[in-house]
Image (cartoon, rainbow, N blue to C red; front, top):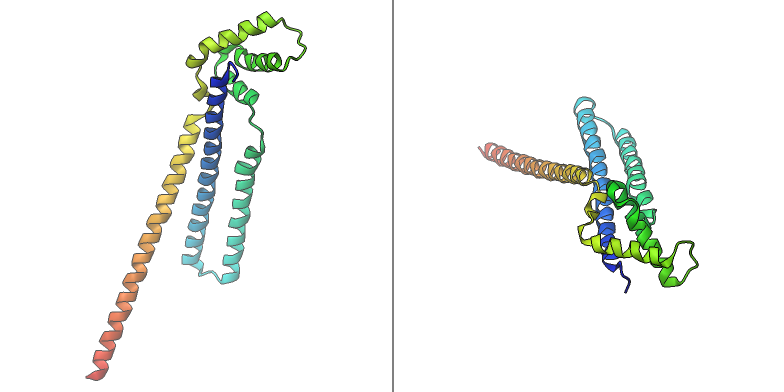
Amino acid sequence: MTTLSHAVERFDALRRRVRTGIWLETMGMVLLALAGYALVTYVLDRSLRLEWPFRLVLLAGLIYGAMRIVRRRYLLPTAVSLDDDEMAFAVERRTPGLHQALISSLQFERALVRGDRVVDSKEMMGAVIADVESRLQALPFDVALDQRRIRKFGALAAGLASLFFGWGVVDRSEEHTSELQSHSDLVCRLLLEKK
């Protein structure tokens, strides 16, 4: 077990949150594209009564757009390796007071454990590691994430999902009402025919 194992554990938790944030952003954008598609097809269908070939072209456009969104917002970002050095750099970028101490301590500890030849003195490396280890509990690992952006896309995804759910419920109740009306019309017609 390394001296900075607590930092590594926090990096693992941060990595999971980054992946969740990427997934939320992707879902928000896909649902936004779906909402745009639904709005466009609803307006066009109400005014023009589109034939099925035009509907297929619109659907193909939606599928193409959704695939581009998934590729750009999910597949490419998740293909990037988020090793401990990258996570330390992300924390340091948002916390200028660290002055690259976190990433340096990770690299120094790795060099000392492996017994690599280094230019810096082992005493200096050990002092940097000890300094970071003493400040580890107070380091703001959460600042590496853009919480506002994650909340924004999470709210967008939740709002659009609830919109589609509500639309489905209303649409289903309208179908049920029209089925009941057509059934009652049928009963009325049958009763009138008997007279």
